[in-house]
Image (cartoon, rainbow, N blue to C red; front, side, top):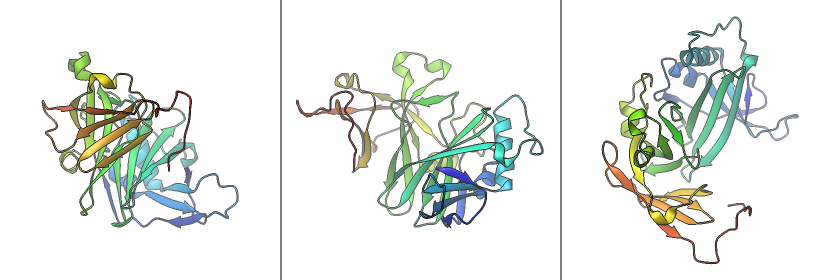
Amino acid sequence: MSSRSETGQGSSAPAGRRTPYGCGAHGQAVAEGLTLYACRADYPGLTSRMAIGVTDAAFRGILAELAAGTRRGYYDDEVFRREDLDVKGDVLTVTDRRLMVIVVRFSLQSCHELFYYLLYDSRAASLSMIPCLPDERCEASHTCMPIVVENGGGGDYELLLLARDLRGEWRRPDHQDVLCACTPDARAASPTSAAGGGIGPWEITRRRFPAEAAGFSFPEVMFSYQGQAFWADLQLGLLHCDLRGPRGGGAVVDFGFIGLPEGFEFAAGVYCKMS
């Protein structure tokens, strides 16, 4: 996915309501100034089917948020131009109800980076912006691709990530593994800024894998079904957890494991395309 500053290469996706969650004091300006474009197949020189448009106001907001994450305190928009901003994005998934999840990275001359999930709801014509897990608190484990859980037909959703908690008081091995969930309640309670060591719109819960899941590494397929979330490693089997149990606080999510039948595992180094 590429960035763009001018129209004419394709059609824009309509987005009326734009809502940032825990994206800093300038998050609204950034969200308001982003436009998703579907690129024309016949336009010369394009290497991507989608592009992200960034307005001047969004650029200034990105500069301000980049500066907030450094000791510098500011980035001068008279020194840095929009051409200096590097924007990279990848479409992670599109659900059955047409909810598209994009991960986007903003960086300035290899300095501080900003990572966000953009969630575009084509039915509601809305765009949500959610920060990826803050580096000083959590890091994604196994994969940075979240599971999208759609709750009913009202447009509510959750994002689920397997992660490790990096806080000092959770240094014991049995306290490091967590399940991070961006839930409607967590988004509603998240402040404008996730500063001060906060987790923003993410809820964290300790997780516990069963012994037979030892060696579980990279899940190639992830999905939710009937209140359960599944991560499939095609060399081992499926990890799953019940999303209807207690989460947050001192709760622990116990995972189950379904091993693949003997002889049906994919050997290491064998790649397949999932449809």
